[in-house]
Length: 110
Image 1 (cartoon, rainbow, N blue to C red):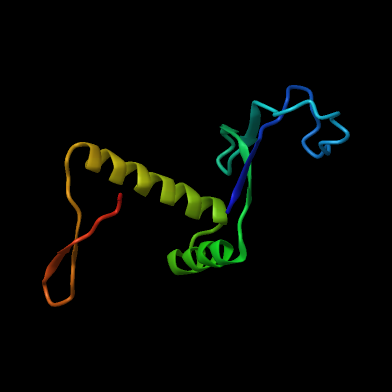
Image 2: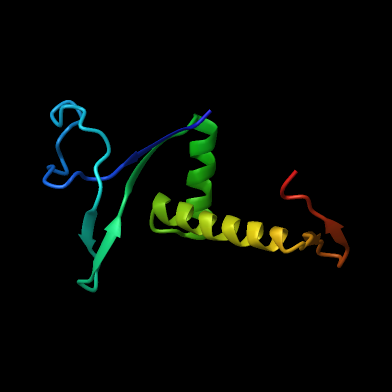
């Protein structure tokens, strides 16, 4: 089972400050980062706890897609998942086309 923890900076909190040092003040919000082009971007830090098999899958996807980071893999996966859900909500059905041209129904959502 994987765990999920969201961390965002609290105004005035030191980004490197530990939870104990923050006195368990809770989630931190509003972290801003500079991107390569110098533009500001709001972000939220997310910490995942994954079992070894899930971590291996994430690492393999990073390598296969030549993603720069695990975050990039996850962002891409979220975009794809969101698009599939939107299509399913519109009534779309999914198929996998085999190399021989045969189309096989594919149930993504059970």
